[in-house]
Each structure stands twice: as C-alpha cells, then as structure tokens.
Length: 300
Length: 188
Image (cartoon, rainbow over all chains, first blue to last red; front, side):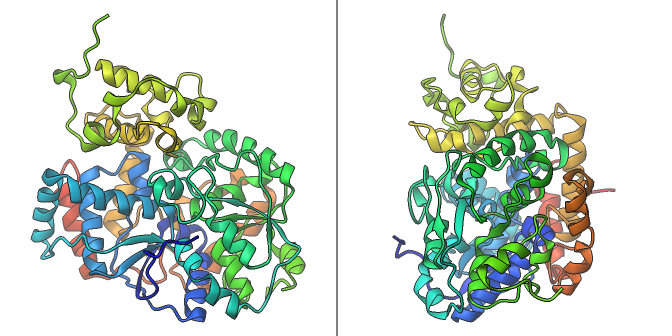
C-alpha cells in the first residue's frame, strides 16, 4: 500500500503560503499529529515560498523558481522535505528534476547560489505530508481517541499531487489516488465514490485573483457529482482545493457539506480541540459534523 | 502540406518546451483535450490545438489563449506519450510576459506576487483575499473575523506564517530575486 521510500522521521516541514494565509489551523493540525505520534520534524522559519502559486499562474520565471528552491534544498540539508501543499510537492520535484538533468540551468543556478554563499545540494527527497500520514497509519490509529464509524466521506486529491509526477502516487493510481481514502477508512469512515472524482477544483492559480468564473464553472460540475454521493464530509489534500470547495459552496451550490483537510480529521481523531486547529475559520460550518463525530463544537 | 516541426526564428529556448511538453511527439489523439476543464469551459481553448500550433511554429497565434489553462495537468496525466501541454503553456506564458504581450491584469498580478516575494518571501498573503464578499453572506459572516482568529492561533496577522522569515534569510531571497527575475532589481 505504501512505498518503503517514505522516510520515518526527521522531516523538514515545508510551509505553504495558501495554507497559512487561508487556513493556518491546518498547519497546526499537522504539527499536532506529528507531535502526538512522536515523529521528529524541523520547523525552519528561513525557507521561502516554493513560489508554486506564482509559477503556475505564469508570473514567476522558471529561473527564479529554480534558484529560490535550490536555496530551500540547501536549507533542508539532506533531510526529507515534507510538503504541506501538493503544489509545493509537484514544484519542488520539478525543480529538482530540472536541476538534475539540465546542465545549463544547473550551472546558472549554482552560480547564483554561490553569490549568496550557498552550495547547490539536490540530496533532499521530497514527499507530501499525506504520504507520511499514510506511512504512519498504525501509529495514528494506535493513538486515536475517537473512531468515525458511520461517517460517510468523499475525497478530493490535489492535481499537483497526482497528475504531474503521476507515477509516484503512494496509494491507488493517478486516475484513482487512494491516499486520503486509506487514511479516512483507517479512522472508521466509509468513502463513497463519485463520477467527477478526478475533476480539478478549478483553482487555476491566476484565476484565483483574476477571473473567478472559471472555478465557478468547474465547481458546478464537481458539486453536482458530490451531491449524488451525499457525504457527511469532503476530505481534501490541498489547501487550494480546500479553499475552493469550502468558500464557493454557498454561492455555487449550497450543499452545506463541511470540507476538512485530511490532517484536520486525523487531529480530531487524536483529540485536538476543534477551536485550537481553527475549524471555526472554515466557510461551511463544521459544527454539525463535529456533533456527528461525537466531538462537539469546541470552545467558541 | 509540408509540416515543419521547428521554426528557428520563433524558437523559445526553454526546457519546458524542448523536453517536458513533448509537443514534437504529439500524435493528436486528443486525450488531453477530452480531460481538460478549461477546454470544457472555453470554446476557443483546446490543448490538442496548442500542441499542433507548436509543431507548426504558430506560437504567436497562441498569445491570446495562453491564460485559459488552469494548470491542473490532467493533460499530462492522460497523455499516452508523456507530454505535458501544461508545462509548455508555462514556457509560453513566461515568454509572453517578458515580451510585454501578457494582459494588463496578469502584469499587475506579476507585480503583486513579486512584491510579496520581495517583502515577505511568500507568493500569496492573507491580504490578497480581497474578494471575500463574493462568497455569500453566510461565508462573510463566518470568515470576516479570520484575521483575528489567525492571531489567536499564533500566526502573524499580515504574514502567511507564524514566524516571518528572518531578515538575514530575506537578504538571500532578495539577492536571488534580483539575479533571476527579468528586469533586475525591484525599484518600487
């Protein structure tokens, strides 16, 4: 189910600009889970954004993207980089691949790095935090205070996790990734299928800031398909998808289905207070789901 | 009709066109277009046609539709020849922006994101969510106080982080941006 290549400890936790701008509680839920299961990680304030949001919007040049991430690789200094956002995951892997294979780009970037007193180091391996949770499912279930039997979920995996380096999906295939399904099922949830499972959330990067009719058009299809499955919760892997599926629900398709990043669900199972992981910052109210999970709404 | 796979006068030297997008290998099967959300949304955007125009050297004709792509990479995951229209689109976007052919809205967005990177080392910041009102009254009611909730969770109100990037690290980031971003140092 899970590749032996996923490291077990000493993660270099790579923060996400979208996650921590929109849902800072997700990062807190990730750290809560890692702390609770005793996984060691570095929370380094010095790394920059991967620039993936701007890169895929088409406004951050490739060389700036490569150079800033060469610096990030250097900071990780051999530790395994664990991304909290699939765009960081796909982008860092792409930068590493280009710098490993394209001598012109590598030479240019190495020169830029030298000018700031750093050496190029492409040794860190790159993973998504969902792969780590998948590898640690036994530790997670052993520590769980709650089981979520009777809860029906649908999952939405991030495009930049499953469609760029599509051979590296840790469970399932790129057509049907099952990383989130495995995590949710381990906590007791049932996972329903739906026709538009592979459809993007419509994030579109530049569309986020310039033309929001594009996400609305796509989400109309996505929500109609999710509605047929009638889940209690939508489980996500990407902060951008979380935002789109959560914030647009009221005006595109008023379903009232709470959207949880998978680490929030896991943190709740391990006993996190919903208030401490910022669930009150979600657009679709999560309180009815919390009642159904047997947790209650936390402090308000 | 004789097809020329490369038109040297229009060539853009970019690894994403040379090796990643794989347009020279495209056999026009159309799986990219069948799975593309942007092609479903816009009548004038078809990834298969992008690959065809790249083969024919018709890069200028793509300028107006480059910004349709939503960068989901469904095209890449479905291509039987491991091509990526999405990667090629990024190379064309970078060339369009550098030559002044990008829409004004994109140029403005580029300036905002460069400023964010230069000031904070992040591309997107909490202040960039300026359109909360579009999401409906209940969402506004629930989320209008999120800046306060950020602070409750221990995060900086204006930064994407709990701890802003230290100034010595920002010096390295700014130096790399000055070296690698077209136009050199930021002057605004």
